[in-house]
Each structure stands twice: as structure tokens, then as C-alpha cells.
Image (cartoon, rainbow, N blue to C red; front, top):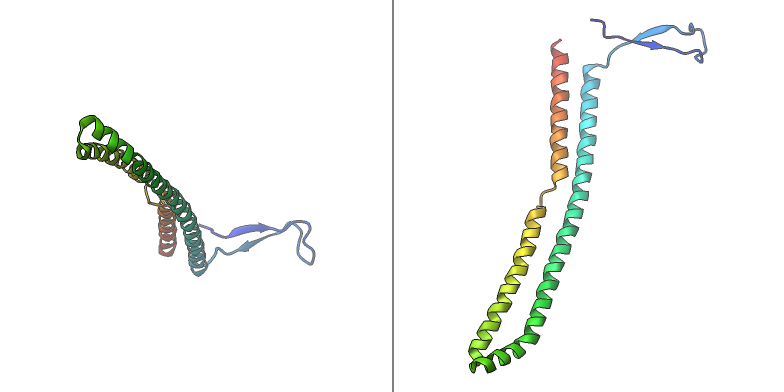
Length: 159
């Protein structure tokens, strides 16, 4: 099988060569192929790392926003609870003629609401996940590409 490429020189080439003549150029050597694969792989790995950094930055920003929401929610819940606790304990205590039971009931209600808010925030974080999905997918594609290239080189070496 002839693996030489035909190169056609156009009419703009000057000198003693025939216009439109064809010349054979050899296929790249195995060393050149390995060099190209190494270079391409290095370039892909650098691109993957850049993508991973960008994705982790974005994910960190999202997690920070969620954490801020949780913090603000807990802070407001605590402030509201403190402001209303005195009122509710006195109101329920007056109704029951027992202030400790009023304080217990009010405390349970606030604890339930706080637990519900915290559970929802944790569920949001779990739903989004913490893995850089696009980077993992891209790395898998790069690995598959590198394996195919290596198999092609091995196949060329055995010919």
C-alpha cells in the first residue's frame, strides 16, 4: 500500500520547477506521531484543568450562596424566635395558667420550623451535587481519545 501523499504545487510557485508538478512527501515518522500525540494530550490535559478550575469556581460560588441563604435563614429565624418567644410564652402561659408549658410548646414549634428549613437547604445541596460533572465527562472523553490514538500508533508499529 502506497502511503505517500501527492502534493500539487500551484501556478504561483516560481523557479525551475514545473508548474502543476506533483511530488511525494513521506508520511510522518513514528517519532513525529508520538510527539504529536504527546503534545495533543498535554494540550487537552491543560484544557481539562482549566475547565475544572472554572467549574469548581462556579460550584464554590453556588455553594457559598446556599450557605449564605442558610445562615441568613437561621439568623432571621433566631431573631424572630427571640422576639416572639417572650410574647408567645406569656400568651400561652396565660391561656394554660402554666408558663413552663407555654415555653415548651413555643420552643417545639420553633425547633420544627428550623429543622424544616435546614433539611430543605441540605436537600438543595445534595440535589445539585458537589462533583464537577462536565470536567469528569470531558476527562473520560479525553482518556478514550488518548487510548484510541495509542492503539492507532501501536497498529502502525506492527505494520
